[in-house]
Amino acid sequence: MKSPEALRDLGKLLHDARRRSKLTQEQVAERAGISRPSYRDIEKGGAAARATTLINVARALGMELMLIPQAMVPGVQALLRPSEDDDRPAFTTEPDDDDHA
Image (tube, rainbow, N blue to C red; front, side, top):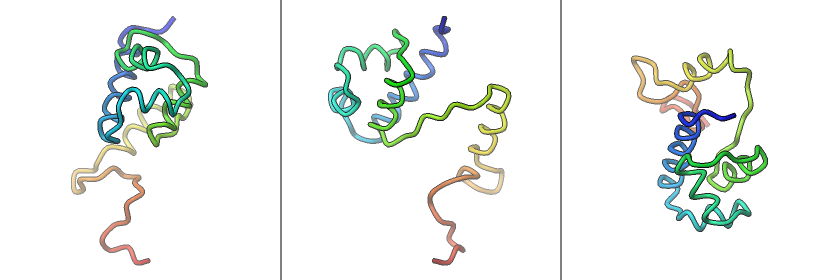
């Protein structure tokens, strides 16, 4: 059984990604192949979704769903946090100013 907190956290992540992508719930749902009410329920944290649905939603938002061992989550989160002397995550697709093409 999924915890309500985990569902809300996932919903917030999807909501924020959708807003950054400037997409409507309808557009994400259509791209993911689900109904708008189904997507809305996932985004609101009120419903769990199958893994295949989450993969399709993530891809509709330009994201990729990754399954990693729970013990590795803190390490992955640390890699994605900016360091003290940098304002970007440790891993990013944007080149550094001093990178040469």
